[in-house]
Length: 234
Ligand SMILES: [Zn+2]
Image 1 (tube, rainbow, N blue to C red):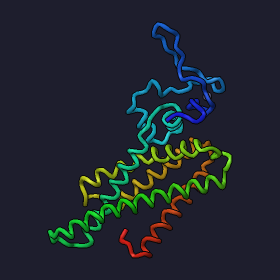
Image 2 (tube, rainbow, N blue to C red):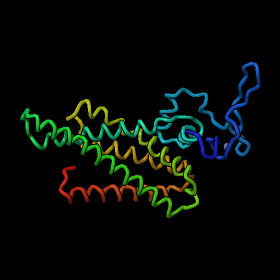
Image 3 (cartoon, rainbow, N blue to C red):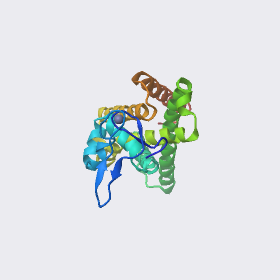
Image 4 (cartoon, rainbow, N blue to C red):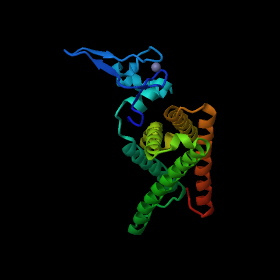
């Protein structure tokens, strides 16, 4: 992702001017951190699969590598894709609950509209979750979210760390074999990696991060409750 602040040492979080030094004639050496004397980013030599495994295990170093020292730029597409999966799953559940197999054109259009509605609702819930997190962090640590680029950086980190939602794809493929427990576990995993992303990007304590996540969940559930009160099937 890169910026703001440039590269960081994955071990001690200190800013670093470079990840490796070019000694000409094809000789590259990993830069050594001035404050902790360890390699600034050992992951630049690692296989992407190993890095992914380390990220799944929620290793702080791997998060620092991905968030500060790489140029990954897929958060937007990832977010849309996950929302589509979520909308599709909800839409399926909606079809199950309203058993209507009439092949009428009107019903087909209504079903299509249902899908867009589910997509809209899923997007609003996601937005509420993010707004809740940002509000809590902004109230607790206004200095860490001073500039627009701080905001954007945290937003990107949060969207990227929601990659666990890709586990919904098997749910889309196998439809009914997914139990609510599975969906709960996916949610817990996504929340864990979200909190790790907040902790790493803003260098916060675990307590404050948990508070931000809880605030996000509260606002998200508030929106869900509101929709239910309005009589929308979500
Ligand atoms: Zn260091």
